[in-house]
Image 1: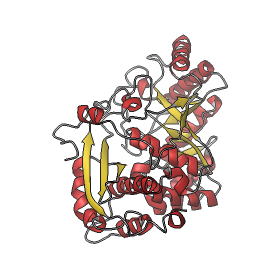
Image 2 (image 1 turned 90 degrees about the horizontal axis):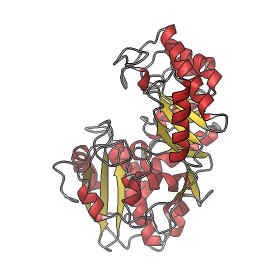
Image 3 (image 1 turned 30 degrees about the vertical axis):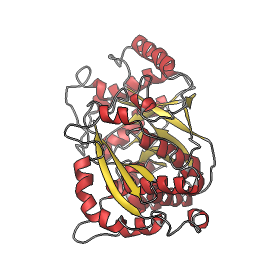
Length: 405
């Protein structure tokens, strides 16, 4: 659709500069201050000689993004920003002397689409395919009560959850809180692959989620959150003990890269299996889809290839009748980009978010964002439809960062 709409505009403006800015880390959604300390927000700004600029978000720290700009800025400076597919192909096919850095390319791609929307006075979602919907369903995070085997504590937690997220239908919950209570402290860690749980440990995990289901009732869905840390017997064991509580799906139980182990798990599982937040480009999703190894894919727009790359991933998933959900632990740029993507993808289901009451994300743009019953209203302004607030960005610069330095 972009090529058709942009025909009369192509060749009229050129890219003049690319800037990068790092924000404080954070996963809490309350602020961008350090929380778990494993996610980061890096914003990219592409400027043009027409005074129009685009904003994107990259899935890597700012120092890494700036380093990779030594490769990508020369490919873009002086070029027409509306030739997005050409830029995507040129950047993602770079393999000498280093492989393409897809998180950086993702941020650049989002910024290019933001420019295209501003030039053509259309929201990005209208340029991608046209809209299938005007809102994007969100799911939130929860950790459960302090005592996972206390049914009363779960009911208290569920009541507070409903009050905090009225109208929301899905929450993602990891079982890390069991460590240090019913399981030994530091029993496992994120991406420490092929860890094994004993039968008794599996039983405790299953009992905790049975209490969760009883407290939430049948009308709210929950996702069981893993971090690519388990071996095949444990992953199968998790599906067995979790099946009675009917989670929506089990996320990332096995190590990241594809092997037939993923297919064996899906064949044995008594529930849906999802993965994808750490995969890049269609080429890394293809074996999961072609081998029938997952029920749901979970790409991250700022990590897997931006709008252009993730549209290709969604088209690939469509061929295998697999739905798409989106990973998101980033800033308002990431979240709003996900909303535009979700509006334009037929097989989109929902997007993750770290939003909660009081989140700085609500205040990061001049327009704000509107969430009703767990659904983010997709902006209708040109491009991403948001204007970032300088005061919020300046107040949340990462240590040592200069404002659009």
